Structures are given as structure tokens and as C-alpha cells.
Image 1 (spheres, rainbow, N blue to C red):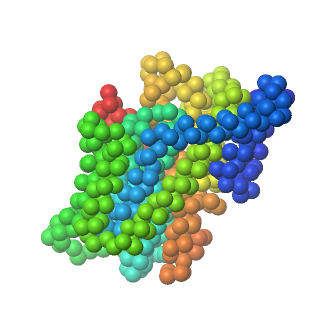
Image 2 (cartoon, rainbow, N blue to C red):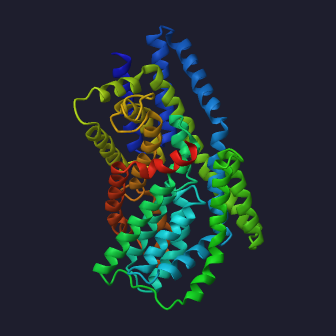
Image 3 (cartoon, one colour):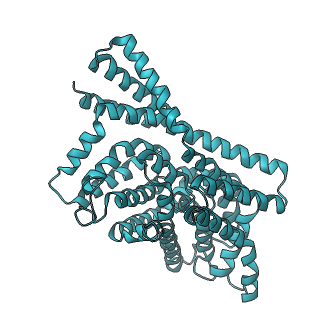
Length: 463
């Protein structure tokens, strides 16, 4: 068998391992190591013992060289910002402000939850953490006013996915590492699509609550004075966002330094608002656990990526995609549909790092290559621009799997928080979140039809 045929079989075996429950980090590392062994032992003629030692050396060197990159330090700082903001009480203040300003709409607390999660996403890099936080804050408030429990849980689960897109986003950093794209450009590109997604979520909540009065009544009775009084509590969130953006795009520091500065500012705010040692300890431990999980997954996939490079599967697949006799947008749609199917069986980060080594070169080739100009491209964007645009699209597709059964992680997190206190099951959360799948499809359609939504800010500030 040729190396390409072997790599296809090993890639299929990798998918099977993941589907039967093997952790993505270990499955990718094992398949990558075994593939490297076959390459050097058989194709390179080194024999069993020498081939295994060569594969082992590569498996050890490649992750270390990539994991030592300063870009990866963005991930723990972004995650830490979110946990510190929660313990500083900024999330509750943000939700209260949103409730007072938009609670008068049909399904007002649901809309407030969506906008509050969007605001919290601007200082939190993890969608799971966002869902867990607002399951504690928003669901009791909605149930107290008579909201349907499925609807309330679904809003929180879907709203939490916004943290995957709105920077600072850990998953955008992972995309940048795997595809070697600009971290700064990707973080900047996520703002407007994140806002568009939040607005579509909010419109869906209003529409559903208008059709069915039993889903969620509006919240009225707040005066303009009370609304204005709620703003100071939410301003620290905007302040941290401003610091991160100004530091990166004002030329004062790298994204890594901006993330560290943002974490320090939120820590000062948390201490000033009375955060105790036990709360600080919890924030640090939760951040460390989530960071360790993400780093381990990256470590495993880098071994797999190096094997694919030796086998030349990404290049072969990219050439095949570029040679298809059909519209580039039809081919892109087929790739996105594959993400929908995979999202039913894999978590967001696992799906991203498993597919990008093959899907990203294919999309670049489909557009005309890395050096193509916008005028000569198939998708109407230069090679650099399509890398950024596809990053936002694929991350939005990853958001789908966070609320899609049977693996939708956000739904399990919300159910875990709300099951005992409010008798909300995982099935209830999935049913409540199902309308937001349609909203996400609409958002993806809008971003494909109008790529300037993604590219406007990067073009404006980065040239």
C-alpha cells in the first residue's frame, strides 16, 4: 500500500478510536507515532528498531518545539481572565445591567442572558466556563419569573458558545497555532461575527417568546435612573476589553502580553471587590485544569500533524479538492456539512485539531493557494484573508457541536449545574437549545455571503 492509502486508513482508525471513547489527545498521539514508525521502518527502510527510535524522537521533539511557543501562553491567561471575572462578581453585575436595559422585550431575561454572555465572552476564553457561570446566575432568575425550564436552559447553553468566537478566545488561538495564522488578526476578526451571532440569538429569543407567551414574560418596571445605576458595575468588563485591544493593536505589546495584562487587571478588580483566598485558589485550579487539557490535546495532534506531513495526505487532499469540477462554494458547503456530522460525535476543540491539518490546506488550495490575490481567487479573498475568514467560519461550526446531541458539552455543563436545584435534565437542555442550531446556520450563511463582516476590522487596523 502507498503512504497515502495507509494514512487514509490510519485517519479512519483515528476517528473510530475517538468515537469509541478514546481521548483525542491520546488517540492522535498513538496514531501519529504508529504512522511515523511505518514511514521510517518500511518506506524509509530503517527497519523495526531504528524506525521506532526515529519515530519516538520526532514524537518528542515536535510537540516540545511547538509547545514552547509564547503564543500558547495566551490560552491560560484568557481562561484565567474569565474565572477571575466570575469570582470578582463582574458576571452578575453584567447580567443585572442587561436585565434592566433589554428585559422589557418578549423573553427579556433570555435576551439579557444572551447579551450578558456576549459581554462575559469578551473577557473569557472558554465557552464551558461561560455556560457554567450563567447557569448559576441566569437560570434561577428566569425560573423565578415563570420561564419554561427548557427554554431557560437552552438560552444559557447557546449563549455560552459565544465565548468560542468573541475574543479573547482560546479556540481561535488553537486555530492560529495549527494553521500558523496571525493570532492578532484572528482575535480581531472574531468581534463583529460574535456580535452578529449574539444579535441573531437575541432575535430568535424575542421571536419565540412572541409566538409562545408561556416561554418567558418580559421584565418591566425599571426606571431610567435604575438603568443608569447598573452601568458602573458592567464598565470593568469594557475596561478590560479596551486594555487588551489597545495593547495589541496600539502597538504597546504582543497578544501574549495583552492577555497577561488583562488577567492582572481583573485580578486587581477581584481583590478590590473582596475576593477571598479560597476563591482565588479555585480560579487558579480551574484555569490550570482546563489549560492542561487543551495543551495535552495540542501535544497529541502535533504528532499526528507531523505524520500527515511525511505521508503528504494534506497536500494530496488539497490537490483533489482544487481539481473538483464544481463551484468552490459547493465544495466549501460539503466541508462544512462534514463538520456538522462530526460535531454530533466530537467536542469542539477535538474536532478542530483533528480536521484542520487536512481541511485547512484544502480550503487554501480551493481558493487558489497561499499567494493568490483577491481578484484571481475562487472565493473572492486573498490567501491571507481566506485563512482568517475560514478560521471564523470553522470556529462557528465548532459552536454548533457544543449544543448538538449527543456530545454537546455546553448542554451537559448546564444540566450538571441545574439538575439538582431545578430538576433540569440533559434532555431538557438539548431540547431547549435546538432552535439555536438554526440560528447558528443562519449566522454561518451570513458570514459566507458577507465575508467583509469578518475581514473589515483586520483590514482596518492591520492593513
